[in-house]
Amino acid sequence: MTMRSSSTYAALGLALGLAGWMLSNDVALVRDNGLMVQAAPFRGPLLGALVVLSFFLAVSAVLSVARDRDRGTLEVLFYGPIDEATYLSGKLVGLLGAYLALMPMLLAGLVVLGIFTRFEIGLRLIAALVLSLIPAAGIVTIGLLLSALAKRVRSSILFFIAAVGLFVGAGVTYSFVSRIPIDDPASPILPLRDALGAVDTVLSRISPFTYLEQVFDWANIGSWTAVGRSLVLSVAGTIVAAVLARLALRWRGVRTREE
Amino acid sequence: MIEARGLTKRYGDFLAVDDVTFTVEPGQIMGFLGPNGAGKTTTILMLLGILKPDQGSARICGEKVGPAHKETGRLIGAVSEHSFLYPEMTVLEYLRFFARIYRVDTPDKRIDEVLEELKLGKRRHALAGSLSKGLQQKVGLARALLHEPPVIILDEPVSGLDPHGLREVREIIVHQRNQGKSILLSSHALSEIERSADRVGIIRDGRLLVEATPAELQAQTAGVLRLEVELDRPGGPFETTVLLISGVAAVEHEDSRMSITIDGSNRAQARQAVSRALTAAGATILGLREVKGSLEDAFVTLTQAAGSGEGRTE
Image (tube, rainbow over all chains, first blue to last red; front, side, top):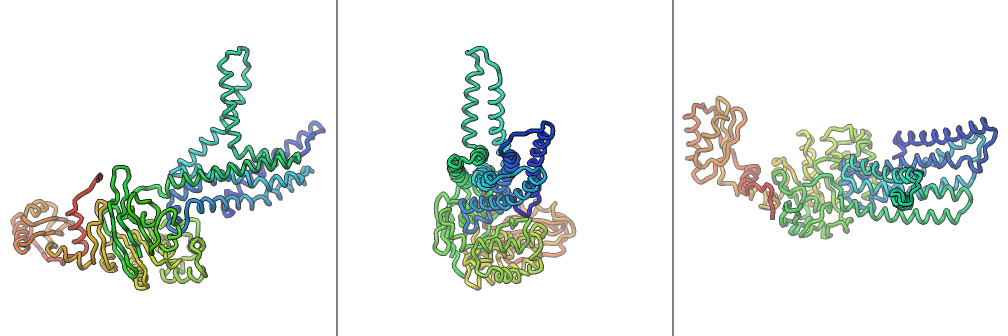
C-alpha cells in the first residue's frame, strides 16, 4: 500500500462507495417513512469505510514481508545496518503513513456526501477518525506478524484467510448456535454455546477491529475515558504483536532458500 | 579486513561449512572458489550476519558480525548472484533509498559518481524491472559501492554480464582493491578470479581445502598435463579407449575436440600412448597441443582429489 499504487485509490473508492451506499439507504428510509431518528448518521458509513481501508491495510501488511522475502529484497536490506526491529518499524510507519495520507481524502469524500444528503459528520466522529490510527497500527502489526511467519507470499495469503476465517467464523458460529432454541437443559448444544461464546470473547479481545469499533462507539457518545481505555488496550496489543513479529522474522529468517 | 575464524554451519545432520578460517587483508582480493553446494554462499552469509554460525566467528574491520551487531553492515558492500531489485523503482530511486539507509553524505553527488563509474548514467530513470540481468547486476554493484565500504563481498557478481560488462566490473573491483578495500570474490568465472585475485581459497564439502596465491596453486598442478586433441571425427567413441591409458586422469570431449588430463611423472610416455591409442582405434589426429596449467586445472584437480561429499555429515 503506497500512495503511488492504484490499488490504494481503488480501496479509497470502495470505502467511499460503501459509505455512500449506506447513506443513500438512510436517505431512502427517510423518503419512505418520512422520519429517521439517528444521532450520528455518519457513524455507520464512516466506520464501514474505515473497516474497508483497514482491511486493505491488513492485506498490504500481510503481503509485505513475505513478498520482500520472496523476491530477495529482504536479504539485501539485511546486508546493511537493518535488523528485524528497524525493518518492521519501517513497514509499520510506511503503511500508517499511507493510511494517514488517505484520511483527508476520505474526509473530503464524506463531506461531499454530507452536502448531498444534508447529514452532518460531527466533530466527535472526526476525532474518532483521527484516533483510528491507533487501532490501525494494531491491524498492521498483526498483518506483519502473519507475513513474518509465512515463508512465501502464497502461505502469507493462506495465513490471512485462516485468521479472517477464525475471527469471522467464530462470531458467526456463536451467533448461529445462540439462536437454536433449547428445551432440554441436558442438551449438548448448551456447553457448545458456552465454549463458542468464550472463544468469541477471547478473539474479540484480540481483534484490533474490536478496538476500532469501540473507539467509534465511545467517541460518538463523548465518553473519552472509555475511548482512552480502548486505545491503551489497543496499544498494548500492538506491542505484543510487534514483539511476536520480530521473533517470527528472526525465526523464519530473511531467505526463502537454504544453501 | 575480513576475518573468518573456524566458521561452522550445520543444517540438521548436514555439515554445510566445516571450520573455515581465512583472512582478507586491506588492499587484497581473495577469490573464493568451489563447486556448487560446496559451502561458499553459506560462508558468505555468515560473514554478512545473515546466518548465525554454529561455531566460530566472523569479524569485519575488527567488529564482530552477528544479529546483535548490525552496525557492521555499514562496513560492507555486498552483491549476491541475483540482484534483488525493487522492479517498480527506477535506478535512481533505488539508489536514493539505499543512500538513506546507509546515511550517505551528499547522496545525489555520490549516486552520480557511482552511476558514472558503472556506465549506468543513461539508465538512471529506467525501471529496475525493465533492465537486463547484466544491467541489474551492475545496479546491485552500484548499491554495494554507494557508501564506500572498506569491505566488499561479491557472490557471483559477473553472472549475466557480457564481455564488456565483465571487463568493466573487473576494472572496478581492481580499482576498489587499489583503494585499500578488502574484497572477497566468489565466482564460477575462474578466468576472472585468475586475472584479479591476489589469493584464492578453494572450498569443497564445506572445508577450505587450500588458500594460496594463483601462482602457488598453479605450481601445485605442475605435475598435471592437459592435452587438447583435434580429431577428424567426434571424440565421444574414443573416451573409454583414452581413459584406459595409464596416467590419464580425465577426458572431456566436445564434437571432435578432446581435452585429456594426464597426471603422473611420465607425461611424455602418456602423450605418446594417447596418440597411439587414438590412431589404433581408427581416429586421425588433426592437431595435438599441450596446455599450460591454469587456475581451472588447479581447481579441477584439487576438487576432484577431495572427492564428492554428497550428503556429507559430521
